[in-house]
Amino acid sequence: MNDMSHPRAKFRAMTEGTQQDWDIIAAEQRQFAPDNGARILAHLKLLAGDYGGFPVDRLTHCLQTATRAHRDGRDEEYVVMALLHDIGDTLGAYNHPDIAAAILKPFLSEENHWIVQHHGIFQGHYFFHYIGLNRDMREEYRDHPYYQACVDFCEKYDQPAFDPDYDTLPLEFFEPMVMRLCAKPKQSIYKKVMAEAE
Image (cartoon, rainbow, N blue to C red; front, side, top):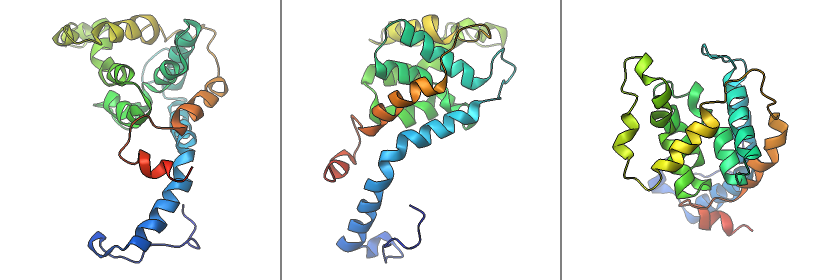
């Protein structure tokens, strides 16, 4: 993508764009998009060594969450969601679930996307009362069809995933799952354009 020898569009404003310009851009995007999973994994690795006061670093927490989901028989999409649920920690100190949800939205079912987007509030059930917040904040979603699914995610996989002695699977175990999931979006306004290259 950064190779200056590749053809580039000629416009200086999008209003000047031509079909030829957009054909160039679309061709470059088709080359760039398949490496999305690798870029996501590279960003996940940035969580290594960042403890934030927790007993394990943020990468280990993510790996442990995914390991627990995998060992409980969850499907590959769910396991990848569990792995990447906190990928926004380094970019979104005030809204990390929103970052993860935005990254994962094209690849997840509606339910799994809802879980990752709301897990911060649901996880708060275990600690909000210690930091001056309402631990029952999740109750505003009580009637939502995915309420229990998010409760289960936090209870079974997210909240217990801070154990330094747990037999956590390495990132290499999950990398093929991430690459498979991120290779084909389930939903995206660009899905049709990207499929035309296949």
